Length: 112
Image (cartoon, rainbow, N blue to C red):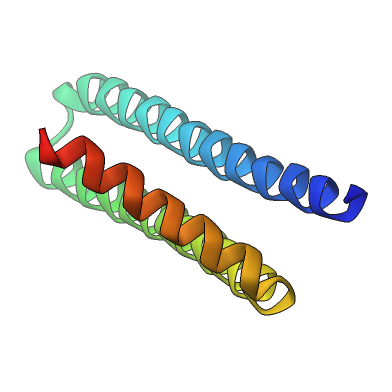
């Protein structure tokens, strides 16, 4: 019984970490965008081509950060999927009972 509670706590922690990681990544992207806008404003006196190059470089950097953040989210989702599959393999009867119960509750909720 304690093993199940420990696994549930780990799964919740994984969910929380994933959510926090995503929020932090989005917050960092916003800060980078604000910094990019500041740099572009400062470069207003410079030639258009130099400003364009800086903008393209900044956009490329942000794109790379966004792709890295998405990869982190995908990795976290895959980890949760593996944990769920392992739990189902370890306790198939309990998993089946939970699935039947959830289906029953959803059917009741959508019937009305």
